[in-house]
Amino acid sequence: MKLDEFYSNKKDGEISATEAQSLNEELAKISLNDIPLDCRALVADYLTLALNMQSVRKEISPALDSLLSEIQAQG
Image (tube, rainbow, N blue to C red):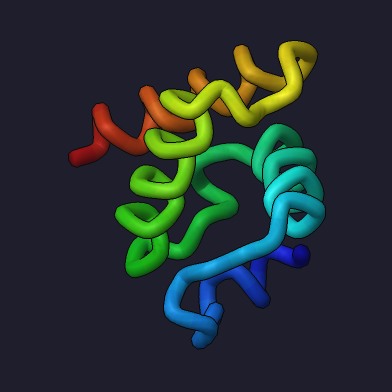
């Protein structure tokens, strides 16, 4: 799943496991400034769930955790 698709997801917020893994990979490569201001809460909510459910590959978990921390600090 591409980031722009995630930002405009109209499927009641549901994404498949495959889409989630693709989204995780994309999110692990971006910085806070790459996320539109109006989408940061959405990304933070998604990352919180993904990290809490431990559904993120260990290799990219630190990058996603760092991104979540940056979003929360901007709060």
